[in-house]
Length: 317
Image (cartoon, rainbow, N blue to C red; front, side, top):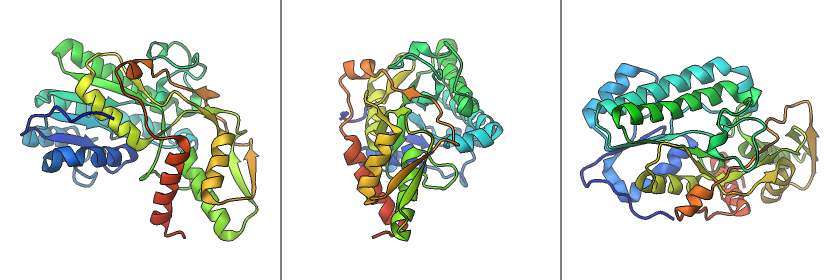
């Protein structure tokens, strides 16, 4: 776990995207230390794709630190069907916030990237230097390119203006506050929703998209939030840094664990009419571990905590 923040007593900390999965976890992590110095704005209050509105916000409130966790995100289906929306919205958010942060004198900005930036067939475990070394995964290429642009923007503003902007690349995330929608959710919330429906209806079978063979590294989102606070305090390099557990599991293994925590005892049917996506995605987290940070939540514990949160959200027994 990370130590206390190094923030001036009068400094404000802005979490962009505080209603999302990562943003909610950051608020849980920061609130006890930052208190009323934590700046939060909903999408209705501040449209981050509106450059002028974002600049006006920064000029008025002058945050000291910025966590840029706002983004349009989604699963394979959503990415495949709406690539224009993904690249446009994410590029607008990144350029508006990073530029306004520099212009208003922010001391440090942390840009949240994604492990989707790495090539589809990158050597495993994936190191930051593999970026752009071979083709991306086609199903989320537009999103990945937008995130790569955000990384390069942080690097460019650091080199040209001396702006202290860092970029963290998290692995696949899950936890309380995730998107459990039917069409645009990731693997954990999507499976939990289908398991819950099957248990409620007494269905003997649950469909799992794809073959079940791809391997994914999953990280509980509260662990990520703690890592980001740690990096905000201790990481200063321009190179992106990976954040993950260093452990991966097959989709089939993950589905069976979710079935267990959800109390589903039926059959898992793997539907190969859906794409698998990247065959394997395991991050090299040796730099972060060498700095003294590592995750503290096991996959089983994290899934149980996420299921408990989902049950409350859905009023399940």
